[in-house]
Length: 274
Image 1: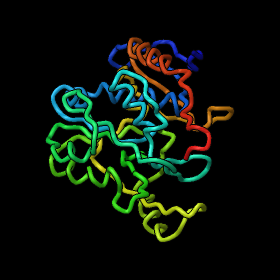
Image 2 (image 1 turned 45 degrees about the horizontal axis):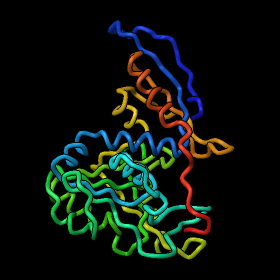
Image 3 (image 1 turned 60 degrees about the vertical axis):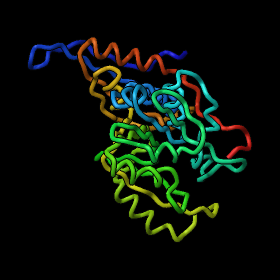
């Protein structure tokens, strides 16, 4: 496990006399996915639905980590993705049936078509769906390759109509200036084609419980996190730099949470897979 990249300040007294500290941490995309997944598994609404309701975890790279944290065991994450971006292009699995979302009813895993359990959703049940874009206003956007909007197309009307929870884990590597503007741009581009001939549109979502690295560290440690920089080289492409602020105890918990995910290997697909 690599040492956590951090800088930590000395405690200072706030206006109320309470000591405050700051720390700087760097997270790679894979480390962010693991941290976010651990926070999602600890959300009160998720824990309540696992105990006495229904939880559906849609497919996706970040959601593969969420599924592992909820199940408490490793899984073949490469088999839990559908549409994705890889090797500079939009892609979908090229062989075999598409993977199904993870479905849990009162904590027990159910197999089969997720839509059957979705039809039974009630207030308090949880649908977890990753995103391709998040903006500073808290809106999220989902790229659509299916003409019927895929899993979110099936779930969104039920979530809205029945007062269910929509939880969206998404890393800050996917930060865009405006999801609404991105969705409008995609509307105009849907009649065109990408370089490989695929078409794409975007569904913007409001009212979701969005969990980025910022919310994850608040859930796991109680700190305030500020996104101050992004990017990197030599395996750190897409990394985010965060400044953390909190009490000495909160900062210690946050650094422990970050150390626990350091060294998370990059998300890999088998050679030739798409």
